[in-house]
Image (cartoon, rainbow, N blue to C red; front, top):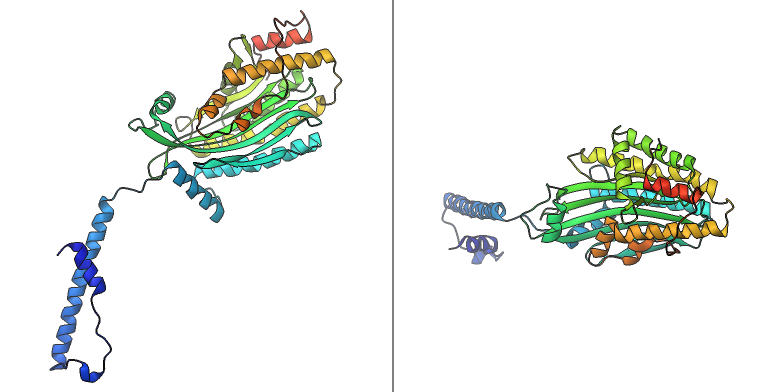
Length: 398
C-alpha cells in the first residue's frame, strides 16, 4: 500500500462505538486485553513515524516558494499594516519609512514659506507599489514645486539585466528576468523670482530579488544640486558647505568625489555647459563601497541637510526686485533645464520606460514655463554672461 494511503488509513481508522455492555465483545482475560492494546499502540506509532518521515522527505526536496514582484508587494503592505518598522526590518521598508517622514517635514516647511498648500495625490501601480505626489503650482513663492515619493515593484527583462550588470556585477546573470524594487524621493522647486535658484533633490534605493523574495543585490543613489538664473556666490558657497558637512561625517573623500560626479553628470553636453552650479551626485553605492547600514546612515544625513542648505537662500532671494528682462533670462535658463531632463537624465528615462509608470509624477520636474529663443546670447560682461562662464567651467565653492 502506498505511503499516502497508509497515512490516510491511520487518520481515518474506525473507533470503537460506545454501545451498551451487552453488545461489546468479551475479553477472555486482563492479560490478553493489555497485550492487544499494546500491539495496537505499536502499530499506530509505526504508521505515524512512517507518515512523518514522508512529510520530512517532501519538505526536504520541495523548492522554496517563489515570490513574484506582486506577491512581494502584497507581503510588504501587510508587514507595514501589522508590524512596526524597526532596525530589523528589510532595508527597503526602513528607507521607505524614512523618506515618507522627510517628505512631510519638507512639504510643511515649504508651505510655511509659500503660504499656500500642496496638492496631494496618492496613487498605486497595478503590479505593486505606488506613491504620494505633493505638488504646488502658481504659489506665492514657487511657480511650481513638487515633492514626490515613488515605489515600484517590477520585473527586469534580459536586456535590462545585462545593462545593469555593467555597474553591478553582483546582479544575477543566469536568468531570463529578474524581479526588482525601486524607491525614491524626488524634489524640484522652481521659484517665481529669477533671483531665487531652482533646486533639485533625489535620494533612492534599488534592490533585485531572489525567487524567495530576499534581497539579491542592492544599492543607493542620490544627491542635490542648485540651478540659479542669477549667480550669488555666497548662495553657492552655503549650499556646497552644508552638503560637504553631511558628507564629511562619513568619509572625507565623499564630497570631492560626489561634487565632481555632479558636475560631470548634470551637463548639457550638446551645449557644452553644466545645468547649474552643482552640489553632490552619486549612484550605485553598494557593498563594494560600504555596508548597507553605513550607507543608509549617509543617505539620512544628506537628505536631512536639504532644508538647512536651501531655506536660507530662498528666504533671502524670494522678495528681491527684478526686471522683465531678468524674468526673460530665467525662462531661457529653464529651457536648458528642460533639455537636460528630457535628453540626458537617467532617472527620467528609466521612469518613462517602466511599464505602468505615472508620467505626471515623472515629468513633475519640468517648470511651468520656459522659453527657447533662437541664437539667444547674453551681453558681454553682464551678470548673465558671468553665469554662463561658470557653467562652462565649474568652480570649487568650498
